[in-house]
Image (cartoon, rainbow, N blue to C red; front, top):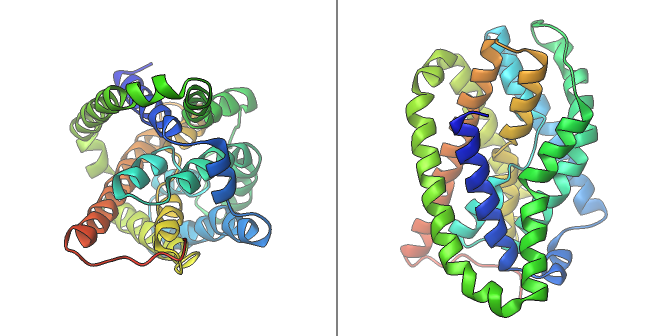
Length: 289
């Protein structure tokens, strides 16, 4: 395991663990949409966003390997960073935690299907291979596991949970900052190697996805923020796992890492804009009581 993977895994685990420490299961259950609302959200994540990704790759004539990198990200929704970004922006944390726990389970089934359906519409780079066991383990370890651990500690030992949140939060944010800085330095050449067409195409997909996610619950902006971040930020860990298993040693792995870094940056920009609106004194209405 590389240093980047170790730092990223440690940062995500600790940040999601502290997210769980701040919530209860009833709060998450009450926040997650059900029925038709959840179906619309799933269609956006596993249908609309991948279609946008393929369309943008073809329109900008993105090279074959970068196109596949885009598809792998486009088919892997709700990155584990969504609750982290939501907490930074003071959005609906219970909704973010709930959806981030649910979507990895759906991804274990739907992401392979989406990739197999969409891949023929892009230049061929070789067959896709999905190793089910490693994929499920990775998906569960990167989001539901630390969230559930935090929820359990909060439920069983509320006093301890309240005391450890501040120090764990400080450590998690420090590790996250170091991880992001290290990735930026190490992957700088890889980002440039993706090329302008790939960066423009993925950026356009990300911003369009953000708008569509936001409009999914525009009446309650704190929830719309979560849906927008979930549509913009894709699960880079899952995409990297598939890229490494299907195309070892290719530029696709570096392309996923580079484009994933772009999405993280755009997510942070949206968080910054949201916080600036609040700091500027402009109230953001919320339909929730």
